[in-house]
Image (cartoon, rainbow, N blue to C red; front, top):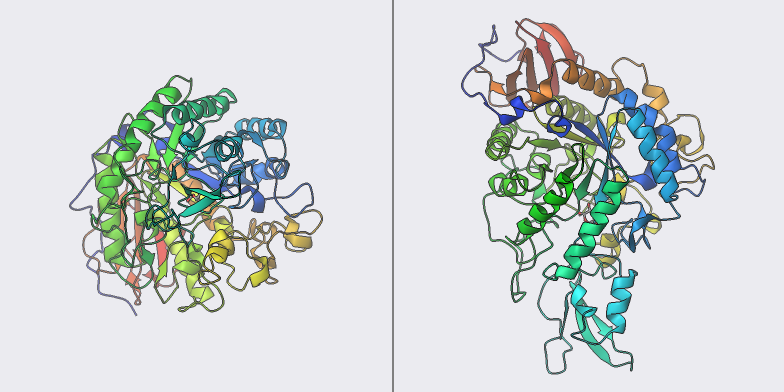
Length: 581
Ligand code: GLC
């Protein structure tokens, strides 16, 4: 069964992108880099406590160099009570003993650099842990004191201040304010926490806070890091007067959208700006940070975790004097449907190119349902809510993996920089049936189990098919239970196995590098049906079939295919790369 298709020959048509990305000098490594996210607690555990650590990462780095990525991004490993898996930082300039020491970090960085991998670390400026000495001092100091002004303390409303200062809700569910108790035992002021109550928001209007963070940047830049992933980079400034706000029903937890059935999902139109997201004042902070980075040798970079739509607005984060990159969550949230995919690619390239920045592409991370499951969900799923045993729209695992492989093959052919999340190269699905008692995401607790949260994408990854905890930990321990059927997905079961997901990623990265796709452009190819995404990037023709009938392939050497090709027909949910003249 082949679909009519007039594309016997492959002639590029219509739009080309005269992108600045194409003129990037070789030293601007980040413009085309493939960056691999390591979630330290779930990558590799050398100490045997069931939680991954820095020495484990160092030992396993050669596997990432073999995969062919250019850089690693490490999620937080700082001193932390781990109430939000390390995104609750109690000391920004030290390593939590759970993960190792500063010496272990230096060893990791040396090994990465000697393997040719850049190292990006996470910085969490919107909030600290409530264990941080800054917050402890604030609590111990009176209302209006300099210590309190580091955070956002306010008097309550109601006759005796018994109601929170406004109606804001925490991203993780429940109110965004917690009341303090004064030293004499009476109820005191309230403090703001856009996330968990153990993550008080810092007051970025306070110059003291700004100075602290510039010192923190320098601390790590002096230690040789190549850059920072900036957590909640759209949240640090709140609207004057902290006005009440009720988010629209369909917005995801971080202000993004929902994934599921709707074909046009991806880049939402410009809606009302919540008073705690995307305030103009954040840009001044990044311009200031950029000056700090530019004072260092080498190409040190910042990437924004900013859940901001539409993309034309997100592009403000990557203007020439701000950050270098921003995660493209509009792309991540786009459903597997030709028109939506083409639209988000066009919009992304236009928006980022318009400010001289590369587009980025991402399909998975530690906050979203893994794309090997997400792309087969049959019900809407707001970002951050996760999938559990009782969720509607359970994914078909085979369909999910097939689509994930096709979506990744499409993504890695696009110009710009791509982000991979540990385990996606193994085809790992979301772990849906985690026992309730093992869940740790604050979302689960703050919603009384109404939202499953993000644990399902954070399960320790499998390295060896026949080892205890699949080689994750020498002791066989694992902080979240691993599924019993992951042996075939273990890295050692896929290395060198033709057709395995790992080999698909490895080949895609090698061909991407050989053909310089990261610095190329997108030229749409005419003559295909609506559900087919077909373009040329340099001498590579990419065709992705998101529909449900096969598509006739043009003549050309197959460089890469996400599933087997029979009789020159591209089956549904398959992507192919062809070399055409
Ligand atoms: C970011 C992190 C997420 C964390 C939140 C609060 O969105 O990616 O994991 O929970 O910020 O720091």
